[in-house]
Image (cartoon, rainbow, N blue to C red; front, side, top):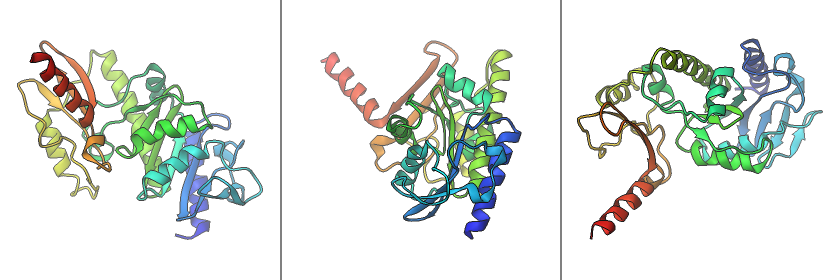
Length: 278
C-alpha cells in the first residue's frame, strides 16, 4: 500500500474516532508500520477529527522523527512496544471510548464469553496495569498482554487495539466499545448468561469460515471440563506455553467467580498445594 493511501486511512480513522466520540480534544493516537525501521504516527497536540495527511509524522523504531513538521505522538512508546513484540501487527489505534474506558477505570475486564462476534475476533479483553501516559511505564504495562491479545483496556486511561492494517485496528476498537455497552446493559438487567466451553470451542472452529486466523486455542485442550459452566480464552500463541493466560469463569453453585492465571502460576499453586498435603 502506498504511503499516500496510508496517510489517507489514518486521517479517516481519526475522523471516525472523533465523530463517534471515542476521543475528545487532542486525545488518542494512531500509527502504522511502514517497514522494518519506520512507522507513521499521528502528531502530538492535534485533534484526531481535524487532521490532514501532511500533519502525519514518520519516525524510526526508537521514536525519533525522520520527517514531518510536527512532533510524533507523545504515546509513541506504547506503539513501539506493540511493534517490537508483534511482527505481524501493522497498525495500532489508541482511544478513549467512553463505556469501555468506564470499565477500565472501574478495573473490570471485558473477558466473559458472552458474544460470539467478540470471541471470534478478539477473545478476551484484559486490563493492562496503570502506567503514566507517555512514559515507559505504560509501554511496559502493554507488553504484558499484547503478545496474547489484539485488544486491551488500559487501567484509568482508555483502550488499545492492534491489527494487520489501520482500518482493521479501528474496527476492533468499535468492537470493544460495542461489547462494553452490551455488557453494561446485561449487568444492569441482572448479569450475563455465559456461553459454554463447548460453544466457545465451536466458535473457534468457525473462525476459518469467517476468514479469521486462530493461532491459539480459546480453550486449551488440557483444561478439564466439569459440571459447572466453564469458559476459557487464550487469543494468540505467546512465545512459550508458560506465558499463556487462562481465564476461567464458573457460574452456579459454590465457587462462583473468575480465576485468571498463567500456566506457570497454576503449576506453582498446584505444587504448593501438594507440599502442604505432605
